Length: 173
Image (tube, rainbow, N blue to C red):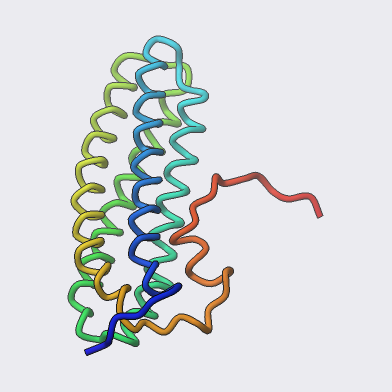
């Protein structure tokens, strides 16, 4: 059994919760934008949806490709939990694809198209809440124990998983 640690490793579960709270806030913003666009078309709604979908996808990819692999090296007993979380990520990715598609179709429309997006966002919010709660309970305690991530720099998995940024366009060379 790993012993509790202090410092950077001990703060990871808190940072994970904070990242989840930021994603919740962003989803609330998309849902609010949807309400403002009733009858006004969906150009900026599409931008809001795409930015949120990108942030959530990046977060989950960072978990799948970095956090979970590092965690499993330290705690192989968590393999069934990690498998469930990765499965959830696939379900959420499918919902995000649906939201993106609906948002792109809603450009210049109102009414039924925006209501369909609202229903998808409601379902996504419920699934995200369940997923985040489970992940924070199941993975949080493991992150607060002796997970050795000292070899990873800020450009490793920590960046996309725990420090969400608004996606930006291509950078000038």
